[in-house]
Length: 262
Image 1 (cartoon, rainbow, N blue to C red):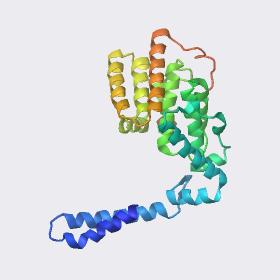
Image 2 (cartoon, one colour):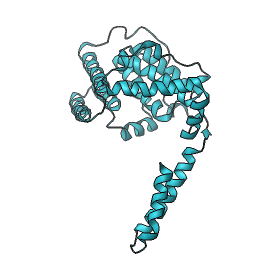
Image 3 (cartoon, one colour):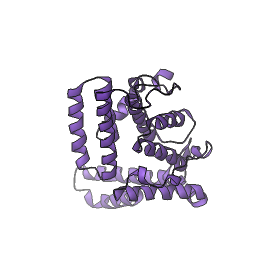
Image 4 (tube, one colour):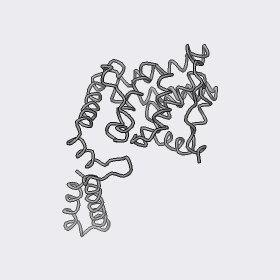
């Protein structure tokens, strides 16, 4: 698609020479579009991360990658129909072994397993899994890693900071990510829990809750809205009644912030 758009823009270049800035824009945008299309279309692997061309090649020759790709499409389709991930068949959610988690297509399955644990409110299991996924050498893409950290922050807060203070996970990179993704529901939910349970600022929490409801009105997946709203309600209960059941039943270590490991 980038290549096609780039060619169209370059095709318009000769008939736009009577204007001042349009020819330069069309030429530059056309070249960039074609270059981006070639870079994404030619199979390349940078570390553990594949571009679209490599993913297409991998899906064609790897039955497990094909299944993982099918599963992602299936889950998106069911979510669009209002079905929550917790209500989908459990057998779909099996974490690939360590070697397979180095494949970026298969690594998404590990993230989906964690998402399902969150929707099931199995916060202890989710926290353990997040720590494991972040500590291991996997092909989980950066945006998913950052969203996992958001879930880890939330789990720590509602479980009474079992593994250390939730705020310790917010290094510069995580803060920058959460600012950039400030309208994403799971990020808003995490910010709500931080305001309510860490900073004890109910006024700020109310403002964040209003922001959540505003974003929820235009969010395309009602099932995810329902799930995230439940997590906000759980944070409210944690604030009112103290520790949730099973909040202090484990002393296993946690992933530190990336800045603290430098």
